[in-house]
Image (cartoon, rainbow over all chains, first blue to last red; front, side):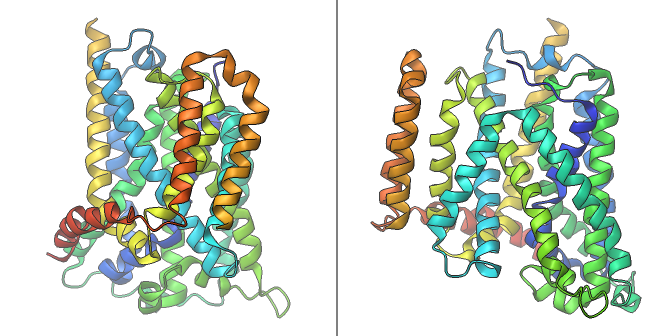
Length: 354
Length: 73
């Protein structure tokens, strides 16, 4: 049965996809490079991502036709293989980031393999339910998390020190922001995955608007978090802390009794990240079935477990994972995203001329 | 060790429950069983140290070093 989502669900899926994983450790490396003006970096990346989407979508409104695999051509195969590599890398990276976060903050005594298997099982369960279920869970969770992110400036009003954000323009500002943009771009560009899901939208004529809203919301949430990181913690602490956002929300002190809101916020953020990773797993399955490798969704369970084990085995230490996420993904992500976009444009051109 | 035991139990339960569904499609059967065996094989690596992390280390040393050069340059 074809899974169909509404444009509103697409918008929330995109915004959730763009900021839930990037907020874990990325602000640290961005702050190390572009200091107190890091919060301006998403403003540079935002138009580029939007432009790429507009370039990919063009005036066409029949995406079902472009991505239809009734006749599996070489270009379709290349598109699906590239997407498969891209998705597998994202899945392994995000799952490991989540496991490392839980292990270092909440369950330090639990073995990493047990954590991975339990999380993988949950992801398999959610991904097997299909795109519609993932979209419904995402909408509920993202609305709540988004409201909390928007409320954070008020909750942290007594901790914000605007002097931490100055001076905005110093020597090397432009160069440093360009370098940070290079690292941020592949993370935000992961949203290009939604080109793959354009055929699953109920009202295709509204998909461009939904994508614009989704990207704008995702960028807005990420910018608010970066801004608050710097304003509350200052550039020095934000560039040293592995998880600056958790430090930042720990600073919330509403009277004397409401001072451990960080647990509540993490509980709300975790399902959002779950939805993101489950969506990636669902798309891995979709890419495999587009390649005519499998048809049923029974394959999701062994794939989920296999990738879960790879998430443990491929990164011996947490530092290897950080190095991969910050630096290797910077170039690898950009290369894969450009290739995916290129092949998508070729597909579109071929369908138009056919 | 706990990881391997868990994986084996989960895979066995999964294959037992879905046995009838898997049998229906010949091509899917091959992939589901094949991937289950691969998963079991990889889970052995949780006990026996096979340096799979070298793949990522190699990527970090090449692609990661390039990004580092771009960012530091």
